[in-house]
Length: 217
Image (tube, rainbow, N blue to C red; front, side, top):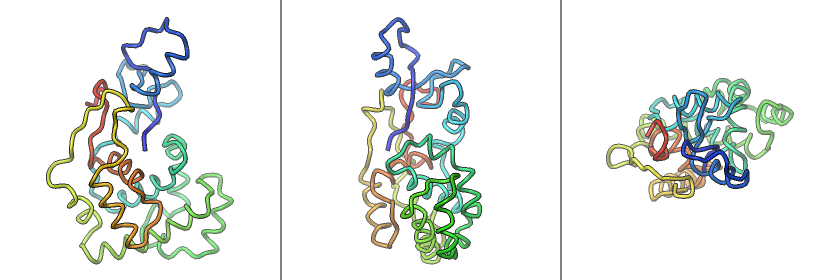
């Protein structure tokens, strides 16, 4: 599930706006600091650029953060990542800082109340999936010692490094995301399709997919 972006550093600004838009959506953005990023370089979207620079693609091994990212990626389904990221503080407030045990114990009444909370995506299935997925997450922690242990064991070695020239060249799924998705669905999780899981892998550093022209590449 790809992110949303803007202008590449080699774009001729005299090109028609339609051509500029086409390049902006595929090859990254340039920030005020002159750095080319996969996304988040536009004025007013510094929070997005900060996420790109400091979080996206950085390996995560803390179970609470892994759960948070899993919830947020599921919330993104059908939406842009920017929309979800803007609501991350709202999610942290609504779901007890992503405390997994507290999320697993949330009552129906509490979940129903969140359907009126403008700070999150107010989709009933997505809201209820947080509790359901938290319950499965806890079961997996007991079985494997940690969710992190189970998840990262899907890689045979270091995270694969890919350097697509544009987002059109970037993968949306992989054999690993297929396997993780299949297993999580079988265990009872929802909003964990292979495309969502591949975006999750990109976010938590299980795949390094920064564009070839990105300063992080």
